[in-house]
Length: 336
Image (cartoon, rainbow, N blue to C red; front, side):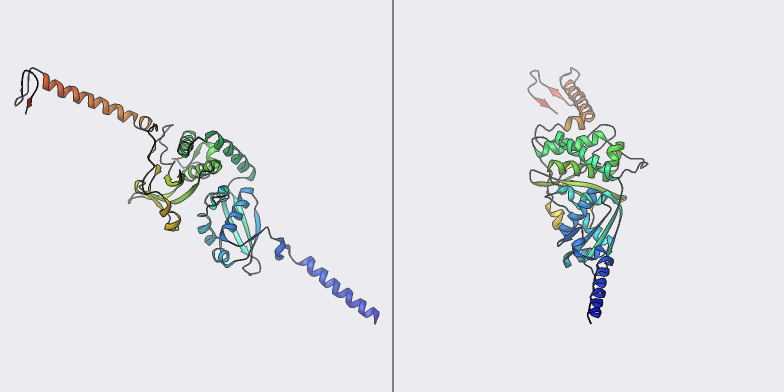
């Protein structure tokens, strides 16, 4: 009897041990990298995974709110790229989404509770960390006493440092690649601006959509940035003329003064359109954008004005007055 009892105990023990050993660690709730209850927690955790360069992470989903948008990679993408975390802006999906090349999501055992996310990155982890360290130092050096001066300093620095890739040969879509080669496209301008503003603690978001007129529109990215508590449109790409010339045509513009930009319809009015100022930022009197921006035009205009003025007065005061004009001796009255 004793032997049979011991035999049963040994069998039961062996079964328990085998179950524990063969049960995958990802099937136990305490083995997950993150437990998320809200979409903000989920997107912030995804951003943390991306910034750290970790290729694969597991998530324990505890709410229907997250399950609703986490059905597949496309559904997550549509929401993730609009995510903004004002407390930790570098952990915002509107920035980190553009740091990945591709990704894959899969549910464990079809329970809709345990999700695995795997990323493929467009830049190696070490290079991204070097870049972010550089950007943090750069943000400190460019930071000024006011929001306006700081935003202008970032705008001008990026435009003077890099060139727009009109040839599309390098196709540098990210800020890391753009700062490496000093050549990039609109997405790189928007990402670089965002990263520097984030380290300056100036609220900013990356907006994607289309740009152009009715005859031709193409994919485009720009920013909205907050100055003195008010959101404005900001497009450093379109302000980058050839060479080191900086213009301010699309700098701190209200939605009534920002033509040819069309945000994706995925942005709800209350999260984007309604928060942007109707009117453009009123530049301070010390703002010197007129001289560098329109110097050639200003000089030509002054020359034309001078010539017209001289010609006009010469016609008035010349001794050979034109027909139909009578001038009295005291030049008091002019009759036409």
